[in-house]
Image (cartoon, rainbow, N blue to C red; front, side):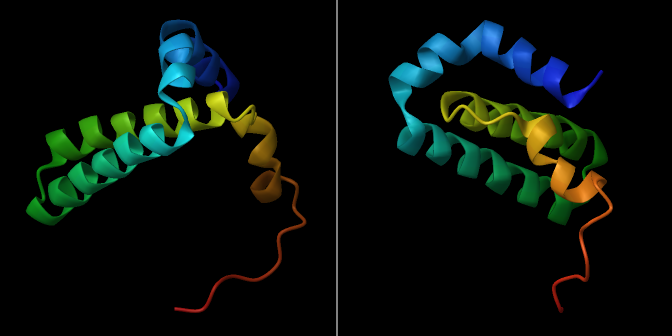
Length: 89
């Protein structure tokens, strides 16, 4: 499945409600899921981490949808071969 396909699936299921909720409140749900992912990673619970990665990605797609961002196009930054360097540790 391509990123755009998953983003469209999330849109079809949830976008109406997500737009009603708005960006700020949706971002808080996203952050909550990131926290749950953090807990799963620290606890080394692989099964839970897999689930939380999916949740984080779904909420990221939701945020992109309600802000009219195509994530697949946004990822061109990393796939175009033009990205140089990296952030220092």
